Amino acid sequence: MKIVIPGGSGQVGTVLARAFVADGHEVVVLSRSPWPTLPASAQTDAGSVRHVEWDGETMGRWTTELDGTDVVINLAGRSVNCRYGARNRREIKESRVKSTRAVGQAIAEAKHPPRVWLQASTATIYAHRYDAANDEATGIIGGNEPDSPDTWRFSIDVAKSWEQATIEAVTPQTRQVLLRSAITMSPDRGGAFDYLLRLVRWGLGGKHGDGRQFVSWIHDRDFVRAIYWLIAHDLSGPVNLASPNPLPNSDFMRQLQNAWGIRIGLPATKWMLEIGTCLMRSESELVLKSRRVIPSRMLASGFEFEFPTWADAAQDLCDRWRGIHRSDQS
Image (tube, rainbow, N blue to C red; front, side, top):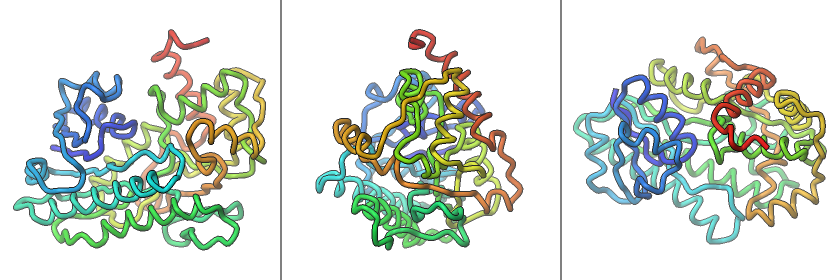
């Protein structure tokens, strides 16, 4: 297949591109950044992945890449790992909505449009809850919780606008899938798992806040397998990409400690997290919001997870991390 990945220069795009190239597919990454600035893990495949520049907003030469391609996987959007000030909020939302509209327009105008458009969304669209899991049919879309912080409501507004931009695109010959993805865990440097494991290695891997908030996640190999599944199977609309077994933060961190083989894990209270994330120029929502999401549509379609439980996934990721980052194991 020919697969075009707008915004494919980040961690998730790198995971997908690496897998697709290994399987012999042609991969084109659309990015605002010249190739030399991409992560080292992506540069490993630089000879196999073709890089095309775009601005994420306007039509240009990049649109010819979508004409005749098999699959488009749009991951474009400014990183949310920042403080949600006015400028960052504007850039986070506009980068997602404008790039999605641009992709939709390019598909609509293509003489030979792709058969599948997989559009990134986020499991953050669901409400903060402990009592029950959110699936695609019965899940509660967030944004109206009276006690939720303004930053949480902003994230949900972004997710809704992101999905709406896809729905508004008129692409009758192209199946649209909204990827409501949980955190993709891979052993690559700079990703979410790398950060969490660093806390564990330093003895700081205890629970976050009261530890009751649920963590939804997906192993990188299951993420790739799920993308292949969605390409091959006739699913459209919102699809949750997450392990079927989300778990409370306290259990999540304890199992990660066990996988690494360490018993000490100092907890971080809510006020400590607020200060820490502020100093790190990030938002506490990323660790304090309860994301309890299950992939009902994937399971109903027959998809089987290789890593359905966090204990097994964490062990595999720790083992692979050791193999990749031998010089960092201090």
